Structures are given as C-alpha cells and as structure tokens.
Amino acid sequence: MECVYIPWGEWCVDEMADLVSGGTQLGYTPSGMESGFELSTLFPDYSMAGMPEWTGYILSAVVGVALLVIFFKIVSSTMKDKIDFKKKAA
Image (cartoon, rainbow, N blue to C red):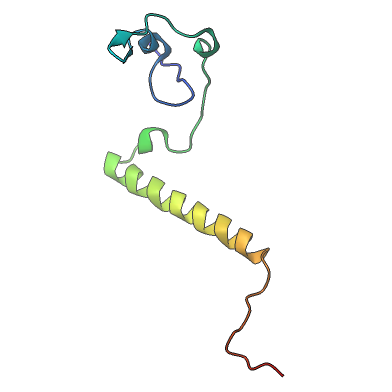
C-alpha cells in the first residue's frame, strides 16, 4: 500500500487513527488530512537508482549543501557593501 503523507511527518494517513496522545488513541483521521499530498524529490529516501545506498546518501548531502551555498551567495550579493572600519575618516 502506498503511503499518503500528512503535512508534518512521515506517517501514513491510515496510521493517524492509531496515534496515541496523552494516553488516548486518536481513533480517527481528521478530514483535512485524508487526501494528503504528493511530493516528488530528486533523491527519494536519500538514494538513486543503480547506486549503493551510501553513495546516494552522500550525494544528496553534497547537492543540498551546494544548493544552500548558491542560495546564500545570491542573497548576500544583493546586500549592501560592507563598511570598512579600518579606513580612517577624512
């Protein structure tokens, strides 16, 4: 059975009714969560077809870090120039 994920975790919708909170079983799936959502990822489960699991895990980390570095470089390039405090005032 394919899992339909809920917004804040990796539980299947059919597992929601079995969750226990405060010692009481939930017993139902909230109506807003029944349809869930679908998410396609570049590295599902940190793996790639045809590669060992550890390779996909490392590759997904490298790609993630590279994307973050690129993002923050772009953001920082839009910021004001730095002030040089070592320069003497005229």
